[in-house]
Length: 326
Image (tube, rainbow, N blue to C red; front, side, top):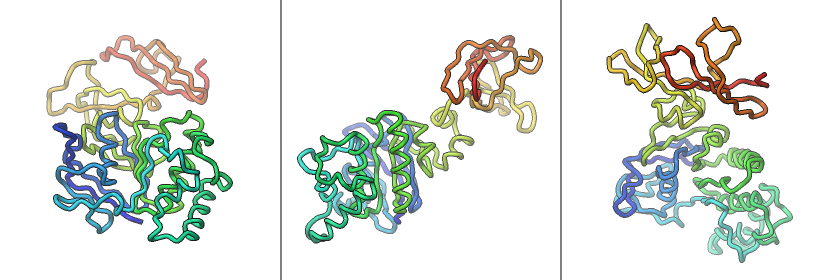
């Protein structure tokens, strides 16, 4: 198992600063999701870790090994990185077995050893009888499994996954991300996965690193990031949330202000409502009066949108209700 430490990493692509003084420490053997919107620098971070993009400044360590600092930049083939790009990127002219064996150079691995490793990897991804097939004969999920096996064949220090499930349908994506997570944890592999899918990050990873404009703005367990967001941006990035300016009315008590009005006093703050934290009642005297304006039905639950009546808040609330909404 290998830890990862990034300190003050800055990367320019042309004149544009893509990573801005980014720092993060990843514990050995953990699965971390790098979550953020398109263009925030997620893939550039992975490419810098892999040695495919030269940093402008900062340091990168794999365990105790310094792989990038000012004039010293270890080339990609010497970093022992496993890389799973989007849509697998298998070599179309090589068989499944040959794709997996591609990273096993002949100088360090005998022919027999390579054959054993390929067989072990095929078994670990449930494709023992697919070694002779060509990538074009595989489904999208099978191709992703082969790409992961190719990345793991060299027993890498760290595995980097760049939105590996983005091209798959919803059902297969859910199934495969569970398989990948289980396999990585079984092998105690340190892994980083780039995603803009907040559900994927919350369900799959041990830790979430939330990115914005080239920086890590919050890093913690899924529960910490979801239930204790440090900023309004963190709150809305990890789930549905209504963020309102508020004014202190007592110890740990805040009253929301009218929508669009910014609090100005030192006793001001921000409150966040999650849909599952709001409950509804048919009793007109039990709380704020509201009318239902929209229902989004998901089967196991529904998200109900309310327009508040006679409230200082002029917008709408959403509530997540289990079961049917009748």
